[in-house]
Length: 172
Image (cartoon, rainbow, N blue to C red; front, side):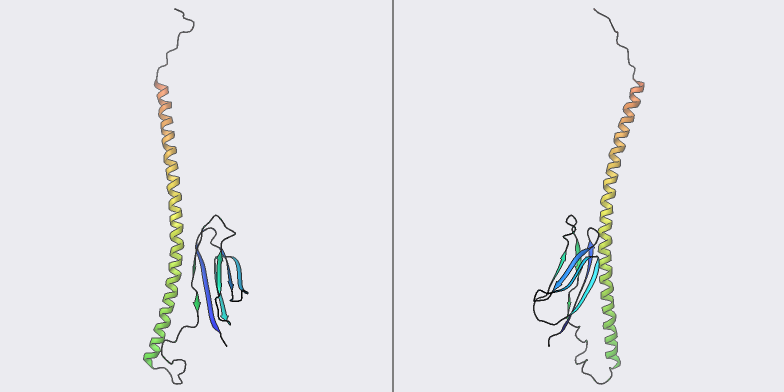
């Protein structure tokens, strides 16, 4: 029989409230997974049938905000690091054991780097958004400062200009 492990971890990196809908269907069109408004999630399944499995990330509930989604579609088990490792009956040598330990440590490093890259992408997007807002606010304040300064100069100037009364009722 056919049986293959499948894993689909996902995370919204940028956009809106950082949530999307996710669905997964098997080759016959049967829904295997359907979640709404998730920021991050992981779907694990054991595929029983060969064919094309489809997955969809939907943003239809939030039509105004564009979103960036990270996903890592993993199919099958990781192959053994050493040949015929699963069929061994004897214990691993010290060198083989060290290789397995290093391999597991490197997989941990890869997972950590992925998490840090995702967090960096989110933080970078927030920083860019904050920069834009600060720039617009500063431009508005500068314009307001110029208008207030010009108004004060005109008001002070009006205090020191001599206004001569126009003669009323004089005819020539």
